[in-house]
Amino acid sequence: SLGAEPELTEVRAFDLAEEPDEVSHRDARSLEAVAGFCRSWQSPLIPVRPPASFWEPETFVRYMLEVLRYETSADLVLWNRAAFRTTFLASLKGKRPALTEGLLKGVMPFDNAVKVVLVPGTALAPLLKGLSFDAEGRNTTGAVSARGVSHGPAGAVSVNGRAFDEAKVYRVAMNAFLFDGGDGRIPSAFREAVLAGSSPGKTRELVREYFA
Image 1 (cartoon, rainbow, N blue to C red):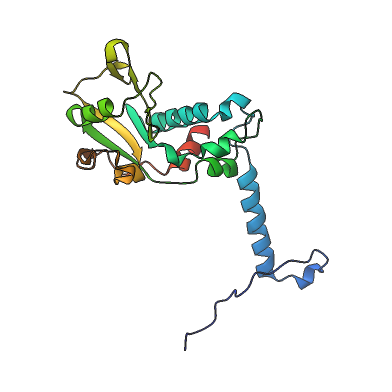
Image 2: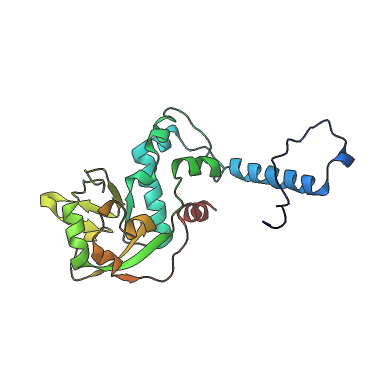
């Protein structure tokens, strides 16, 4: 025997013509829960609609990385480009939708935990030089994006607005996918670096906290 059957064995379609006393208390609680979920999914995270330019892929990615850098108090944030659905963002060109939980999930579907590590400058140097970040802090290969790093005249690298110093230790935020070796872009030395405490939260959770 496989034991007792699950309490719910099928999806029920609710008929709006049913009399109230024909709807069980369990059904009513289910409807209330679903309605509450839908309301939260569609509720704007901010009171005003962002300008159309906010939804341009590069602008959106840069903005969200700055949000994550702020929320983690990091010198530098590294994120894999595939974590953002840029094709979906491109479909919003010229529109001004509200920034809702549902839309945020559509653009940033992978709610990975965020890792913050204390990385020696000597371990960070090969990454900053090898990935060829442009003046906007974007990796020109397109696989990884960063905020908090830039290249100045003659290739001088700055992190968090100051000249990069291999003798310093930097606070670096990234998602768990990159930290665990995803895309093969992050040196193993990062995973051997000291974690700056427990994870501050998941990606979209930190974004919600920023706008709260």
